[in-house]
Image (cartoon, rainbow, N blue to C red; front, side, top):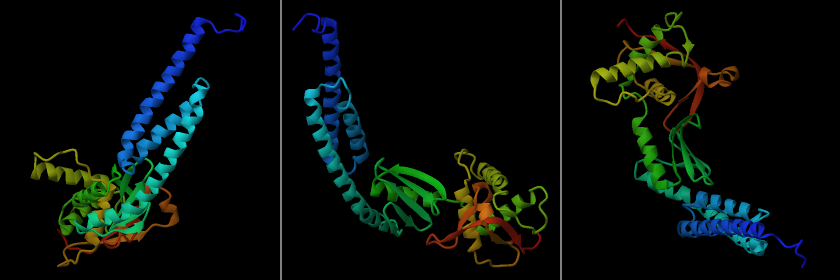
Amino acid sequence: MSTESRPGTEQLVAEFSQGKKHLEAVLRLIGVVSRLSDERAANIASIRKALAQLSAIAEKPDFPAVYRLSLRQWVEGEQQSAKKAEDELSWRFGADLERELKDTGLQLAGQMPLFTVGYFSVEVKVTPGRVVIWYGPKQEMLEECKLSATEVARSVSKVKQGLGSGLDPQVFIDRLGDSVRRLPDSGAGAPVPINAPLPILASLLQDRRAVTDPGEERSRGYSRADYSFDLYRARTLKLSDSLHSKIGLTIATRAFTRNRRDCLWVADDDTGRGSMYSHLQLVGGGDR
């Protein structure tokens, strides 16, 4: 071998140092995968992330070629195991969640990756290992939690308890009437865009909280989901007298459903059935 074709000392040290750097990263990531594999299904997202990093390292031009094939084969085997664990998780999660929800009095319907629990939707995202809880058929996002049947059941129960204003439905109708009357150009009993009273109503409810319980957390907002839930409860109320208005809702046409600001999903019953509405109208009621 001529001296001209041999790598210089600095070049050789640089190549070996880079190779050592890659090998150290590979050993670290293999250790991560090995530790997480004790509970593979629960750690599927983290395992996939580590395997993707290992695949990327194996394809680097300066990764030692002598190890490339072995690393590729190992990663491929682990990816197959991860896919099997993911399939098993998908099959098992629904049964586990149904059992957990029964303890809270809630019933599960649907199948992976989208379940329904009454007027809630439970969207399962296996690969990132997360679950999104929605109000209605993926209408209003309420909470996100890790992919755990116990955690999801706990979260659904929590958001159910905290949904809405907590007002008696008749009192809510009165507050809603106050909000509608404060809208500009709102004729007596005329339909108004369904979301128009929401900012005023939220302000009225916040003022009420401050008066009734000054020590209460003041930052709790009044969301579209809260508003929708209160409308649902008020519409299903059996009024005991004629002094309270009734809420009439107008089904949203396609033109109104193009923009969330122009419509709102409201449940018809506690099974999760509901419709999109564009306008509301308060009818009846005596002078207050």
